[in-house]
Image 1 (cartoon, rainbow, N blue to C red):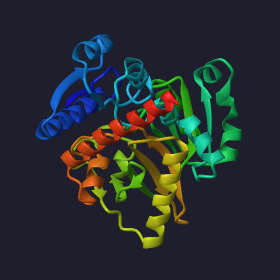
Image 2: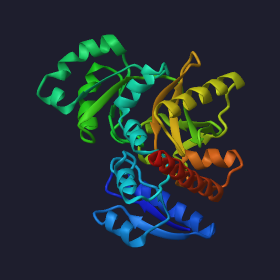
Image 3: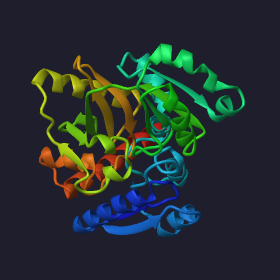
Image 4: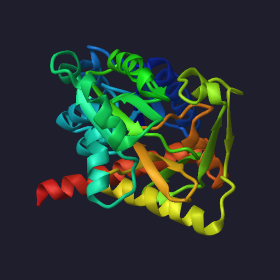
Length: 318
C-alpha cells in the first residue's frame, strides 16, 4: 500500500512531529508499505495530488496539524487519513470549546474562565482578577487555548503571578484559559478505536511540571504504565476518558489527559486528537503494555483509517 506520512509543518511542535513521522515511516517500511514522506508546507496539496497515496498517516501536531486543517484538505482530495475527523479535531484543539462540551455532557473537568487578547489588552480583563480569584481560587494554571505539549503553560500561585503568566500564554495564542489547579496525579489514557489502553501516570519533577522540553527528553520525566491505582479507581479513570473521547467525537486513536485529585475523582484536562508517536510518547507506551508493538499499532491505525473512510463513503452515498 502507498502511504503518505504527513509530518513537520510550521507549528511550534514541528520537531516533535518530525520525530513522530520518522518513527511511523520506519514502522510502515517494516510492514512492507511504500512510504511517501511529505513535509506539510505550501506544496502539500500539490504533493498529495502528484503522489496519489492510498492513505495518509497524519503525524502532525499542534495548530495546522491536529486542528482539522490537513484533514479538510485530505477530504477534498478524497484521500483516507488516520485519526479523528475534522469536527473532532476542531473540538479537541480548542481547550475552551472542549471543556464546554465536556461540562455539558456531565464529564468532570476543572473549573475555568477564558478570554481573548482583545479583552485583555483593550477591555481591561486584568481588572477582573478579584472575581477570578473568588471563582477559582489559587493556585491557577494559565494556558493558551490552542496549543499542546505544555507550550505557554504557566503556574500562578497567587494574584501577583497572573499578569506574567497571561503575557506568556498570549505569546502562543490570542485566547487564554485560566484553570483551577488540581493537586494530584497526572494520568493519560490513550484510546485505540474507542478502547482504553493501560493508564499511564506522568511523574514530572516539580520544576518540569509545565516544561515542554521535559516531555520529550529521555530521563526528564518518569512514566509508570500501567499506573498503580486501585482497581475501582482505574476503572473510573478509563470510564471518564472513554466518555470524553466519545463526547468530542474522536475516532481511530486519541489520548485523554486527566488529573486525579485527593478525592480520587478523575477530571479531564484535555483530549489530544493526534498524540505523539515518538520514543517517549504515551500512546506507544500504553500500546506496548497492552502487548501491541509499535509496528502493530501503526498497522491497526491504518486499518481504522480505511474502515472509517469506507463508512464515510457509504454515508455520503446514502
